[in-house]
Image (cartoon, rainbow, N blue to C red; front, side, top):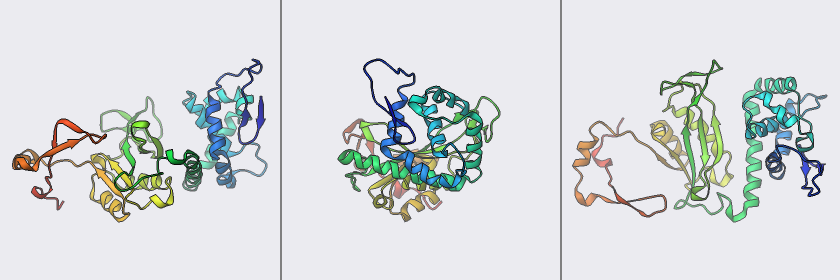
Length: 303
């Protein structure tokens, strides 16, 4: 049975076997949109880009596209999957309307993305509030911080597409930079921000790391946005003076990779035996056969 309460109909299970629909797993996503308030927040945030006589809310178009991707779609036209099930997904825009909506939003992309980020942060805050003591940021401290991982990935493009470029691994496509809120052993992670980049984007681009970290911090409660209770973690791509200096000024914890100099082996050989201490894994247990030592004093870090 269906009742409209938000951007999506509210669906109730009917054990009588009537009104069977396909793609019913999408109801979990539409319920998430409803319970989190994401639909309402997006609708309010994007109201300025909705034509006065428009039938379709830009917020509904965006959430429909997101749901269609989650259900296996890989292009705008795959929104047809949702259009075939109005009892489950409500009124879904036609392909031309979807295209015009995206074009309109893309014409003011910086303001639109800011509005989307604000809506996402508000919805995330509601979800974390409902999670109570199980929320990722509930009981964090400098000793047990909330970890935000920054990492780039390569996405292959199989044909000529906008911003597709040769990559540093001799492929062709894109090089987006992501930020994930780490959930530790209990879960994989929570996507906080992404910066779409051309395939030839540099790995050590400090400006990109600062942009993604800023947007990720904007998804956290205000009390954590300048706090040692947040640890920004990156591989050696984040090991630049500009990025680390920025993290330090914001009073954030950080752990970044560092490319060792060519003479690292000679420097390590100079360390006395008593300088080495057991290494620990993520569960704070000693790693068999692994030891760590402080090398800073033997290195020239002026550059």
